[in-house]
Length: 444
Image (cartoon, rainbow, N blue to C red):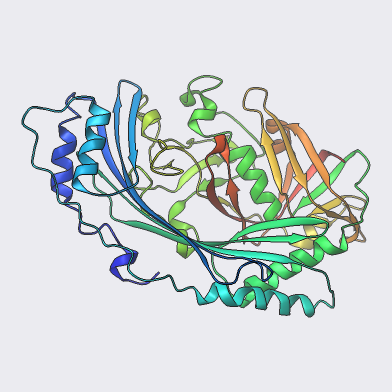
């Protein structure tokens, strides 16, 4: 993003005045109060058969939050002004002092010009050209969107800088299926990669699902990212852990293979979505979720870290200003192993190579886990061979993670996708190698 004021819209806020106003509602020693400022823009280029030109959605607003004795009060508003801020303060506090502080100055930069997104305009053509190089011809309805968001958090004792993110989503609809993905940029390489994925779906559209069996599975980097997001990140979010006890009890528990070293690090995400602070204004950390398969630090926001000095904040994310923050992952990293692709595929005759996963589900109470793959390849002569249709991986999370027997030496930016936990939709990212799993159950 450029360095214009629009790209950093909250730099001129009266930080000191906002903090003084928040002290009026945080009047007990352990209270936490903050103001959350948000600006969102989505630019969409629909398929050619729909109305031409961009569709644009823009919104700006704020939220005031108070945490007290394990409870949270939140008031979200769709404008930013001194009066709106005061109204949110009153709603959260339910009563204001007789002589409140003077209202802070809350002038922010306005949307002034239509958005420019030339990369969005040219990307569908780049994908079409890439498809032709594969000598295939099938109809694709491609919708491309650019998502931009700016946030800033100001509290009574803490004020983060303006955090911005910019990324893209693509939704491809074909006669036999649809495919969606998130991208950090719309480059020629990304168009080639998307075309290759669509071609793979085309060539496997009529493939039969594999019969139920138990054997060797090699997961591509994208599939590995979804597996880790669902089976590790979601499992180690503090609110998920709380369904079976206190999150602190997970520390030191073995959760999977000793080969697994998994981190969540928003600061090392793709450049457009890197963060230095979370949606509560706390500095992000390079959080080790699993070290040699053992839980080191779950994902926590302040609501949980205020209950234990052994838990670390910095993973609070908000779906929008009308929702309270919750513990969520941002950018997962699986530390690479030592195996080449040839090593991963060795002694795996008849096994499956599954490059992508498009659905996953974890039951936090029972630990049962399922993962869906839209297609795969049967391993033949140590290479991915004949195609197979959609299939599922099922099992207990701890048992499944313990069966990881090999990790590739090369990592890939992979696994970008929408996570809709509890109906709160957020983008997630990952950097992963391929992995080998022994004795896993696969079925149609």
